[in-house]
Image (cartoon, rainbow, N blue to C red; front, side, top):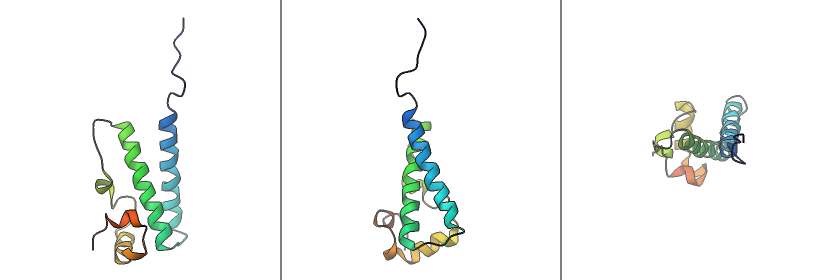
Length: 99
């Protein structure tokens, strides 16, 4: 009798990986194509969630929070601009912003 992987083996990883890549690509596109604060901040927050989920799948023994990841993947000037216009940003992201 041969060994077969469980049905659906790796599906969760593929979904999380694809979601993280989708938002990573959008953030990269936004460097060249300007968008509003709401759209940028929402995409950034969704990338943070996807990155957290991906790291939990890869390293289940090490807990990473959104607070730990906040500030990565975007430039410091963009982060400063988002924090200066906090009221125009995506609500869930606002609680991680300083100022």
